[in-house]
Every structure is written in structure tokens, then in C-alpha cells.
Image 1: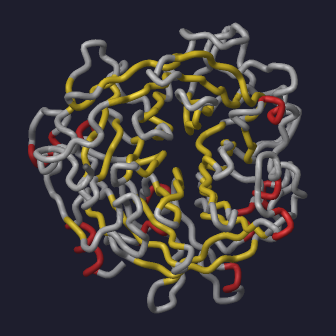
Image 2: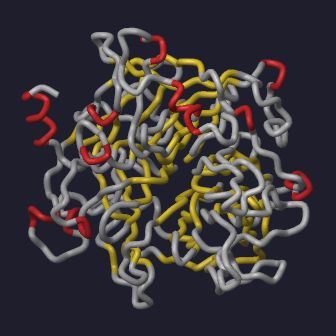
Image 3: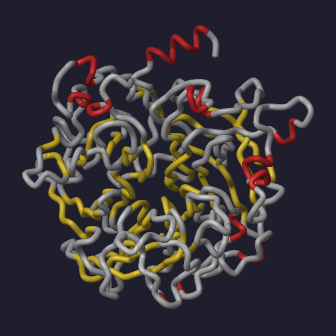
Length: 502
């Protein structure tokens, strides 16, 4: 990075944002960029909303008398499920470590079906109550206790029932909703059966969960065509069936992938993915280039929102590495740094590639943070990128500067993402200090939408997604696993509200 670039990076606001080539279907695309500088540690207030001194979004967060979830005035929440408190239809407690989720129209149109990940890994001991029960027919590997549950919720946000929809998977982190109304759940792990653990099968796959047809969830099979690595999230192009995948990994950092289905498999539908052969379609990893043609080795070097890179796609040679061969992990099949001897294997990496969401004709995806201590060249507290498949570009839409002085009142560590039907994006924070939901307006200003007040407030919030009728924002607390349904005046505008959304 040049001296000039370093100067620009140091002066950037935490809330710099710019729109680019995506269509403004949900109102997120902009014509210019903004800079805001009212950081909490600069303002010097002991107010958890001090970072919102420039813009308060829906208004200042109000303390919750129950000490759970602080929301703006006029907003309320209901607890839909809670680990070790609510019960499954099969009688066991709701599992813990709730993570990525998506909602679907409830049969009959009255309410939703909410599919939720549980990021549990190894088979727990006898006192552990947080795993997903191993119900007959729904178990992939008897040696692990991750998976998904499906929650039926009525139109008033009341829980009707909850049941296991996938079991025996490991470290189910995020995922993605498909255009054919299923949930793709991702294992954020690369593990294999060893004599020293309880695994019986390899892990690091994507699985499909059908919220409507429980018979379709019997005998779960990994979607090997999507590769085996530490998956974080996926986003599906409804027009082409292409599936984009983020990889949360290090040593070396993870990649951004694209899978193109074979023509014979189109149109994709419920159950078609797990029926594909392991080499079906084409799996590729993204290589980004600057305007001068230089390969971008790590996305962290982009410090100015509005930065645009062109992208190319490089074929993955071995997408399902053998169980014991760590050296053949997918991301290790490419050069660790740009090469003069084999430039065809040059690739673009990023620390902590996290959430992904399809909207505006492309994919929004998140890099949670970067530190020089983990091998990144430039430090930041989060990036949001937009990939435009038609233009063949990625654009840096949002960047949080690295500001460690006061992480309780600072936005950092974005993880899961959703695009709001009312404009802007909503990010679940998984950073330092107290954890929040972070929103952005249509013109790029960010604000706190919710604050976790359970315990010390440092458990991450996960899985934000709106109900299909746009009335309810579902969001989870990771630990203790809790599912919230948030309702309120989403259309509100003026004053501290959201401009241009009514």
C-alpha cells in the first residue's frame, strides 16, 4: 500500500458506503458516497448509541426491562424458541448455538416456517443438552450433534411447534435460501473420521433441508458437487441456478466460489442437488484484478468504498478432497501468493468470508475483519462487497475501519447479512464487546437496530431474515440459543427514521 493509500485508509469513516452497478431493486444502490466520523470513542459519551450520533436509524435503542434485547421505540420482540427452555415435538429441549436461518411461507399462508441452524460440532457428553437430537432417518453422522430445526410460527408470531429437520451434521453455521424454497445449510468445518474422535463420515459439506416435505429430509446426503471445505454461506442466482459460496478459513485465508450447474440438471428443484454426482457442474474460485490488471491477492487491501475489481473464475481441480489429505484442501490448490511461475493458479483470498445474500441481481457478501496478526496486509473491522455477475465485477459497498478503542459502542465484525425490503442491508455483529444488529440506510448511513443485553452482551447475533410478508424480522442469539421475532414500524421515516422507504 502506498503512503497516499495509507492516508486515505486512516481517514475513512466506519460508515463509508457507496452504490454501484446493481439495480436498486431494494433501494440499496446509490449515486455517490458518504463519510461519517462520529465514532463513539471520539464523541466520548457513555451511551451505547453514541456511534449513532450522526444518524439514529429508527431511533435510539431503548433499554429492555427484561434485559434481553434493546430496540428502538415502537418496536417489540417475541421469543419464538429458547435453548433448554422450549421443547421440540419429539420432547427434547430446543438445541443451542442458533446460527443462520431463513423463513418460508407457512402452508395456508398464515405465518411462517423458520429453518434454523445449530452450530454444534462433536458429540457431547451426557450432561450436554444443546445438541440436535438424533431422530431416526434424519441423521447423517451418528458422531456429531449439529443440524437444523424447523419452527412453525403463526401470523401473530406465536410458536406453534418445532422439530428436527436435519441431524448428525457438524458446525452448521450459515447457509442460504433457494429460489425453489429450500434451505441450504453449511458445515463450517473440514474434519474427517479419526481413531481419536467419534466421527463416522467426512464433514465440510452443504446439505439441503426442505421446510415443507419432511420425507425429503430422510437419509440426508451432502451436496458433494458444491465442494468440501469450511463453508460459511451460499447465495443462489434464480435465473442461472449458479450457487455462490463463502469460505471462512485461515492458513491460508478462504476463497469466494461459484458453482455452475450442468445444463441437464436445470431447472434445479427440491432434492435435485443431492442427487448430482460429485463432479457435476463446474466449481470455480474468484480471482479479482485491479484496473491495471494486477491480481488482488487479498480483499483487505481495498480501503475506499466504491473500489471496483474485475473478476475471473479459476477452476477447482479437486473439489472433494480425500478424507485424510489436508494438503489437498480446496483453497490450498491455488497459489498462496501471486506467482510468476504458475500465474494460472493465482487467486484472491480474504480473512473471515462470512454471510452472503442474493439481491439486486447479484450477491452481497461479507468479510468480517482483517488483522495484520492473521496475515492480512491491511486491518479493518468489516467489509460488504457486491458481486455483479453481468458486469463481471465486485464493488466494495461498505467498510468499517479498525477502531479498537471502544468496541462496546462501535460497529465491528459483521457476519450474517440480509437485504431489507425497506432499503439497505442488515448485518449481525460478531465482533468485540457488546453485540448488535447493524442497519444501513438507502444512502449508506449505518445505525444500531438492536442490542444484545443478555449476560455481558457479548454473545453474537445471527441469522437475520425477514418474513415473506415483510412484517417480521427474525434474528437469533447464538448462545444461549434464542430465536426472536421483531415487529414494529418498518415503514417509519423522517427525523431519525429511514428516508425514502415509505
